[in-house]
Length: 72
Figure 1 (cartoon, rainbow, N blue to C red):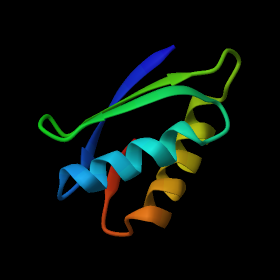
Figure 2: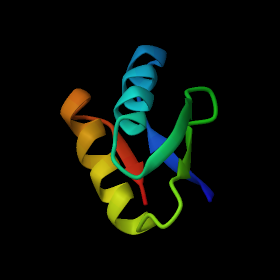
Figure 3: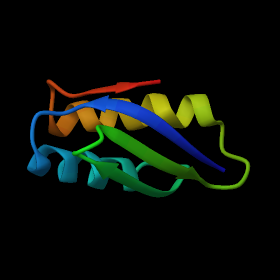
């Protein structure tokens, strides 16, 4: 399943860091961040708890860019 989320990120480099953090979160099969549209598209692994996975994605993104925000 794929879902799109609004993000708040300041630069393209930060967007790349957020994308990498999201990709390395358990339960995420794939993730892309588009800095121009301020959107994150996340594809979840089968059977993943989407809400719990996105909370972890948010935490992981905050670790690399503490001023970013993922709107769940």
